[in-house]
Length: 220
View 1 (cartoon, rainbow, N blue to C red):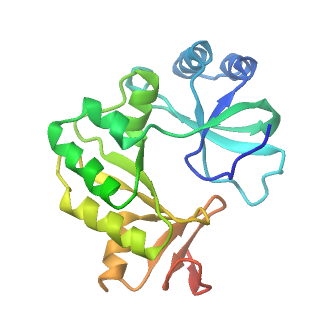
View 2 (tube, one colour):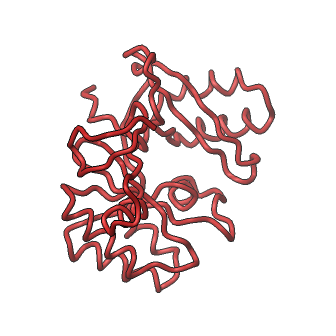
C-alpha cells in the first residue's frame, strides 16, 4: 500500500484482527467493549502526534470512545503493516445535515473561497460511528486545508463571520507542509494582538513569530 502524506487527524482503518487483539489486551470493561465494537463495525483510529523516538515502522494512534464507554481516550503504538485504509474525517457539508440551519452559511462562505472543512472532535466521531459523542457544550472542531496565508485569512474571516455560541467554532488551519494553526490564534496574530502563535506538527509543536515556512520559530 502507498502511504499518503501522514498528518495529525488522518484516519486509519486497521486489520480487524488487530482490533480484536487490542480488545483482548484491554484492562477495563469499557475499553474492551469499545474496541470490540470498533472491530465489529470496522471503525477507524486517528493519527496522533508521533514521538521523536517512534520507530519508522510504527504509528502512534488514538481512539476517543463515546459517552457510553466513559469517553475514555485510548492510545496505541501499532505497526504500519496493520493499516488497511487511510481516510479523512467527514466534511462539514456532511455534518451540517444534522446541525441547525444557521450553520449552513459557513459551508457556503468557505466554498466561496474554494475551501472545504472536515469535522473532527465530537461531531466528527459521532458522524463516523453513529454513537453518542456530542453533548451540550461540544465544540464544532474543524480542519481546513489552506494553500498559504491568503487562504488562511479568508478562512478566518468566514469563521469569524459565522461564529455562534451553539456550537462554538473551533479548529485548525492546515498549511501545505502539514503545519496546523488554531484559527483563533492565527486571527489574533494577524491582527497584531499577539506576537506569536502556536504551530502543531506531526512531531511536536513550536511558537512562530512570522509567516508559515519561515525559520523564525521559538521552542514551545
